[in-house]
Length: 564
Image 1 (tube, rainbow, N blue to C red):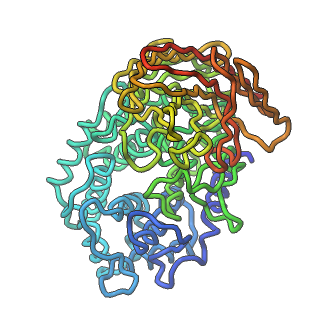
Image 2: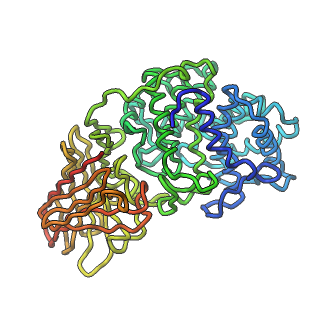
Image 3: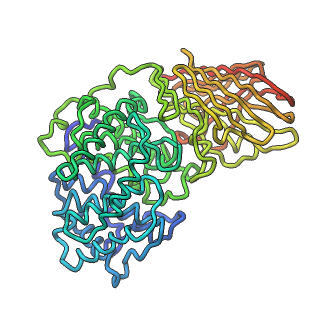
């Protein structure tokens, strides 16, 4: 589908949100979209589902759109959800409460669409809403992007003349400053992981702040804008020419939220990247996602990535969580006569074939329409689920995706694509890189030291080549084991599928591309369990099997890929 005019983007919004009409509770404050669970209560799950469509509706209203039915739903929902006497009351909360996350969407609605969400409320309903929002100041929030939720809530309260907390506001802004690491990049609190939370959270909220507070705090707003301009130069590299974005890190269930930064970039008036280029990224990205199987038969978003998939989900992915992706529709907040709507969508500019992103701890290669990130494996050992799979593989590809393990027992359940997997003698357990202990992102390679299990230490150097990449592993083992150096997963049950195993090589191909691995070991295939790859439900992984004895072993594997 083509996305050029404001009407095109508005139709995309309606296709996203209209399936939700009629599913809201009688009072409008809750939205039940499914029966899977999270770490928070069913009532909070339904409150989250209520709030997240506001990420699209607020800019729609801000930009001049009108839909009385949606306005009525959200006016009623805000009034009833914050009324302690109403049966749909969202309730009291505690420290680290998920409802603080959802307050951000409501706060932005009050800031940018007051005519729809604030002014129609009676004085009592306004007081209930303001009092409920103010509660975020009375509790502890994680030291991460959540600090921006408190900032946005207090800005909304301040702008409407309601009680707010200047000291907590100042403290959170100071904490956010501590997350900045330079060259446009943040870390998300104490975590060293760099992922989409840098783009669709920290920068996104910073640019919303800049749009809302330009007159009150011009210096801080200028800083947020300058950092976003720097970040944009690197973030371009995360997008392929076909509109797809790099599958990497957590919260991929937010799908098209991957491009939310670019909407905020335009909304905040930044122009370091030509407007047509930004429009092209957004238009192609939304069109790419429109072609994926991301909804159920009724048009409601599912948990998953390119198809419904609970295996790769985090513990905080509720049925309504994917609507976080609606942040990318912030461009609807642009005026009807904004040049964005008449500027032709342009392709990506000429980008380096190889670019080091040291702040992101990765090296990016662009080749044949594929974007591959060679990651240093910088991550927490434990987090929200599948941390090694989402951060510690050697390579992540827009074409091949990556796989999430069903278990750590036997290779087919572990499906260790783009990993070096160890199986100790006499065991079925599979051990892979969880996190690197030391690493270095160089101009032409990535070096890391890691230990998958006590008694095993590995030094790995990954070097991109003209045909793929090369891995050299120096292994120090206290015991004998078998190691499998695995290539990308390749989709099966599609036209042109074929697999080949030779003495020192293995290859899996289909009509859209191939992955071959070569080395001094024995070629083999890992028959990955279904629903493990984020892009497709069935895949096969070519690998080289090596014998590793106690002592030091050096192995070298060549990964060759082709994409169509």
